[in-house]
Image (cartoon, rainbow, N blue to C red):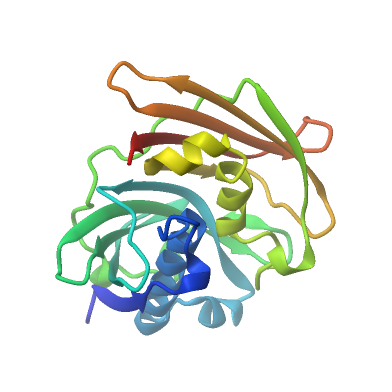
Length: 248
């Protein structure tokens, strides 16, 4: 059975920021597309598990890049399922440039959910051991993300086109809400090369979202941003993100 799936993309004009760098939410779209292709070919894609009234939700990401891809660059994403535990399935990625050089790696955690009641179920009922790789790309990829202090605050509104096939806001949109609210000077002069994302609750169309961000400078010259998305009241946390930014 083929375990490693490979999918190649070309960075389009509408996928870039004003500096011709691939937007981070688009990178998540690349990873999601590669993951979907891999899962379908291995027999447990969304369409296949939906026949059992199940679906996949994103739970966590850790993405470590050496640089972001640039306009017109060909980017290859390699992905494979590597761990299946009672309440989560881990999938890893390798991101390659046009010459085959490694641009970055990523680890992700997915949960299998029962559609009628949104209850988490064991992914082992659809992910079999013969398709799992033994090793991941990052050692201990996931940590604890502190809550943003709310130095920068903004209200967001979830729109119809933010919603995906699971009837909730797509995982890349969470990232767009969070990092898009970082200070403009940071966005212009730094790249987000180490991102850890935790998805805590579903966001639905027409819901109001409270967006908090805090920034601090690290001793090595990098910047760290913490992002927190909650419901409008602040009572329910939907998303946390910790990002390390390196100067361009």
